[in-house]
Amino acid sequence: MNFRVFILAASSVTVGLVELIAGGILPVIAKDLHVAIEAAGQLITVFALVYAISGPVLLSLTANIERKKLYLAALTVFFLGNVMTYFSPTFPFIMIARIITAMSAALVIVLSLTIAAKIVDPIHRAKALGVIYMGISSSLVLGVPIGIMITDAFGWRSVFLGIAVLSIISMILIYTFLEEIPAEKILPLSVQIKSLGNLKIIGAHLAMMFMLAGHYTVYAYFTPFLETTLHLNQHWISICYFLFGLAAVRGGALGGTLADWIGSPKSMLIVISSFAIILFVLHTQRFLFLHFLL
Image (cartoon, rainbow, N blue to C red; front, side):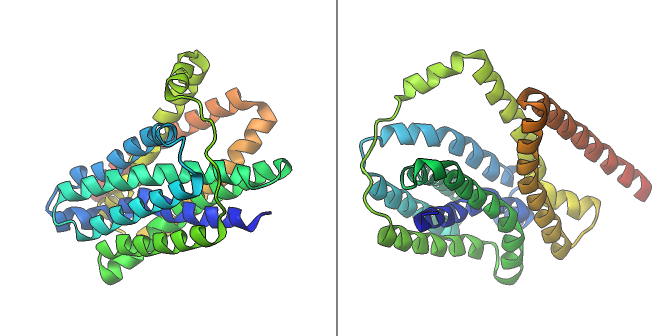
């Protein structure tokens, strides 16, 4: 495996950290900025929406720019967004910073995937992409528990300062080891949008959107749920998030195995149905627990 793929994966870990790390420290952010926890939760919602839209849009708009230069530019913007988060005095400033980091993070992830596919032999392409996705998943597993520990020790702003430092390290590695990569022809955005006219494609997107909406909702408000319902401290909350992340990574492998075994349509129905049942059970158990306390 080309060692540069692991450098791209490391950069993916860095930008992936900022996506959901706010979920574990949401009550602390809300308290410090004097906003409701529901409002603070929009930091995750806005990031997810901007991230989803920015990837294909920015890739199309920057199609003529040399890839290494573009990668370094995206990491620079990502660095500035995290520095802005660290120094932001008010909630609106942090919201703007989240939009900046979401746009740059989306471009970094897309570039990591496309560049990784280019710099390896075709026979190793799937493995290279798997390494990048593993980096993204690792950031979700480790990000929140580490963020909670750093917040307890140094305050929540230090989390984003640390991510800014990691982005500088990523820039140095990319500048040093990645060669120049010419721009390539990319399908126009209009063509990509037209593909949504296919009912199968739009159905798959909607299924994924609703599934992730439930996932992000649980992940974003997991900390206040554990604090108010189960009265857990930060130590146990970080452990719960770590287990949550491990289960998410393991679920990806399990989903692939299940699809190979019984086919994608049946496996998707099983997974989505199971997720819906778990959400219902989680909701029911909360009220049963509160009833027991009262």
